[in-house]
Image (cartoon, rainbow, N blue to C red; front, side, top):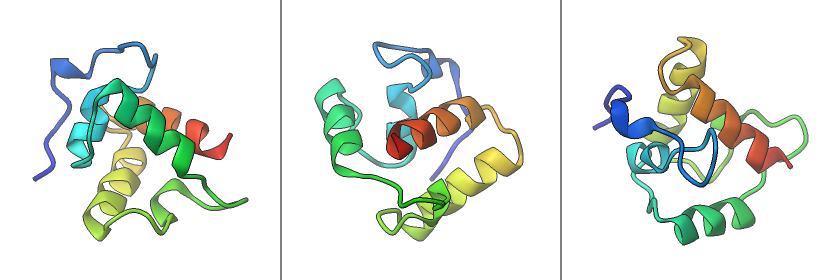
Length: 86
């Protein structure tokens, strides 16, 4: 179940990309896990973050809604988008 951002969403060694976002997505959230995920997942040119084939429908919905609603997670989701587009 996805929950609203709590104080655990503070920046870590990944400024703007808190491990709590990965936990919220049901993904491993250790530093090495985050590095691995970013290194092994890329968005195609023009692809929206929530459209990527590597998300489950629930994850895609969370990402889409988090940005559309400008939720507490919006900054972290935007940063993830930047990292996967690089």
